[in-house]
Image (cartoon, rainbow, N blue to C red; front, side):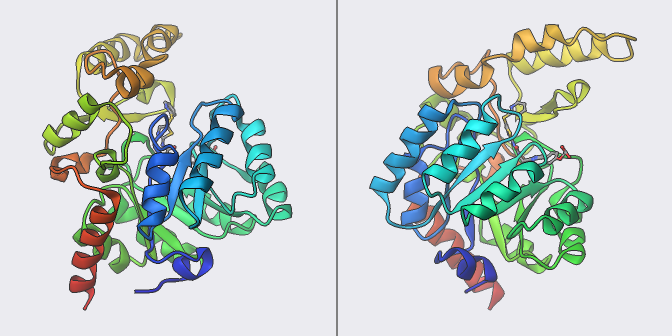
Length: 311
Ligand code: TUI
């Protein structure tokens, strides 16, 4: 089934792999692209040299299109913007902010910008500045999230813009993909299911947590900081929520206490496999992710289910 997304980006299936910081590297992105989706390297908080290495590796591992995600809270955003232009990356997705000030540069370099949007207002803004499409991401997603669910965000964004919309948040199989299309999306972005892909280099302890998670395994921390993040419940989230409770309502909440806990927590989970003190970002759909597979098997299974349903 072709969509405007497939034609625009020259990909076989309208499935983007979610750009998971510290996790989505050349190994995962190239495997997804080789399987017919759009693999995406997550720049996260990494400096440009590290991201350059991953982009070059990805070019060696696939001749298919792939993208780079720029996380706009990163201290290296300007460098990463220059890097994707230099390296001739064709597709850039963005998260956790407004990418407007880089748009001119992306246009000069023929880069398709596809921002993640948490609201109709952001989607309209992105269409106005020349985004090629938008990813409407519901709060079922893992990591940094907005306030709306996929079910309510996607159709409202679809009605508000004429560029293609991808649905994200809570999608891990053909039913979820078909539901996204019923809401008017022309593609989907999937993160959590790719966490347990054979080609995903995240620590095995992290994969096991996803495989064992149930429907209520995640919690939202960081509401008080203005950067809410969905993660799997553990010792770290208990400590985090306790401090949030203590600081909420104070005239001058001591957010440094939270910074101290949060700094480096994602790496602890992803690299060291520390499931107590690490930040295990995951979507609410983890309860349905129960087997490790290759990216090719994941994508073909989803497309098989999707096509049977939409027929
Ligand atoms: O970006 C994500 N998910 C992420 S980023 C990340 S790394 C991180 N870790 C800890 C704290 C913060 C970040 C982990 N997961 N998803 C895309 C996304 N974008 N979700 C929400 C948004 C968003 C929010 C506000 C997009 C635009 C926006 O605009 C506000 C503005 O600045 O106008």
